[in-house]
Length: 235
Image (cartoon, rainbow, N blue to C red; front, side, top):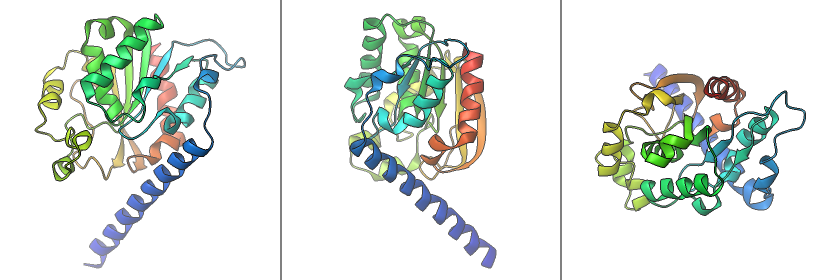
């Protein structure tokens, strides 16, 4: 009984730390906003210019939440693109994918690597299934993405969260479309309180990090190590 209680306390602390992290970055992103255009030009000290990277954040996140990844990618020589019309990413997955597709066309981007968090990975996969997306996107690195949904989603009335229900029609259609899975790297935490079923994606390259939480891995050096490796493979 004591061991089980310690386990629950440990998980509770991990959950609390996860929310503390996302709270900090949401406030930080609101108070100390950065101009995303500064990441369009790779760090001049980078060894070589890499492929363009498009960031897709999760639900109720904007690109500012992914700034640790943008900074790292820029330092490695990648032009980093954000899609302003996504806002805080509360729209339907297919509609958000269409906004990203339009951005790729407007900017005439090709050989793109998508780096996404949570819902962003579902949007990225939907994008890759579109003819224009399939032509322009080479690879995606998705972090803690509910490819098979989350059982918790059914307890929410808000459509933007209920969309992650394992019974959602669009989500089921995405699961059944596995043609692009081989071009996806799914990176996920050892414990994710939001996705108890995990983020394993059949046919993809799956990497489990020894990290805790749904949000905290974004600022973890272990994720950056994997990200550098995977965008290098994509290149």
